[in-house]
Amino acid sequence: MKLHAIETGNFKLDGGAMFGVVPKALWNKTNPADDKNRIDLAARSLLIENGDRLVLIDAGMGNKQDDAFFRHYGLWGNHTLDKSLQDAGFSRADITDVFFTHLHFDHCGGAVGWNKNRTGYELAFPNATHWSNKAHWEWATKPNSREKASFLSENLLPIQESGQLRFISETNASFIAKSEIGFGVLFVNGHTEKQMIPHLRYKGKTIVFAADLLPTAGHLPLPYVMGYDVRPLETLKEKHAFLTKAADNDFLIFMQHDAHNPLISVQHTEKGVRLLDSLPAESLNQL
Image (cartoon, rainbow, N blue to C red; front, side, top):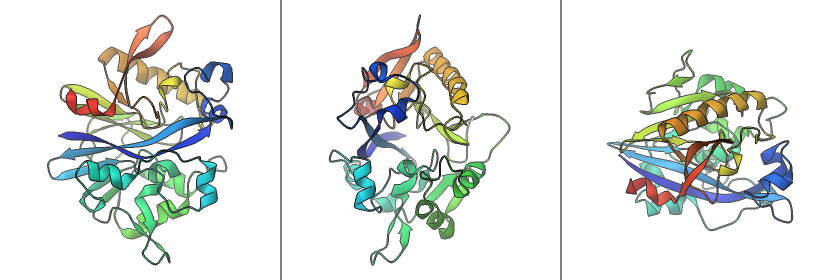
């Protein structure tokens, strides 16, 4: 097995929304805001090269929305999905599986693009099976008013219509030790219904793709919960359980949205679980 960090692009979001009820004077220390109160964020995917499978976890926001949409999210930097795949030695056509942690636009938008004539949409990864879970798919395709702006039909319906959509089997347990995609999956419900958090065993370490359970290293304190979360009290419980396990077992946490801390480890302190170390993405293959 070999792992590759795939940088699909950087963007910005309002810091107040990203930290909920936490005062700016606190979160601005770890995630400094610009003059529009926005903080730096990444859309970092993980590519898993394992035998004859090439699995991409999440696909970024893509590029099919209009200029007004992207201006709102303050795109910055030079990263693109295609360039990152090329740097890893692959192309879109090589991807065998696309696994979505959840279906908010910044996680799945890159899986669907315009066709050549811009008359309709097509899959960006034409040879890939696309993985979600049934409960979350129904949640996303029949969205509540709170999340409606994050679940875009143009990101979802083309996948369903392609016939290349599959669902991870669910059980009553919150953690599946090994799913159909080949790695462990933790189901969490604070941010959105049935978000899936991948757990990989790699070179003797557990690598966890944090997705929106832990957006940035600045979100390590338990009360630091996004305003976007539909069940913030559930997020508190889920973060506590996850971070305790991560510190107990020396997990290496792959940060999808932290623009400046691609990989982190955590430790127990008298203030709770806190940052132990921050590592560059290249450290994945230097373990």
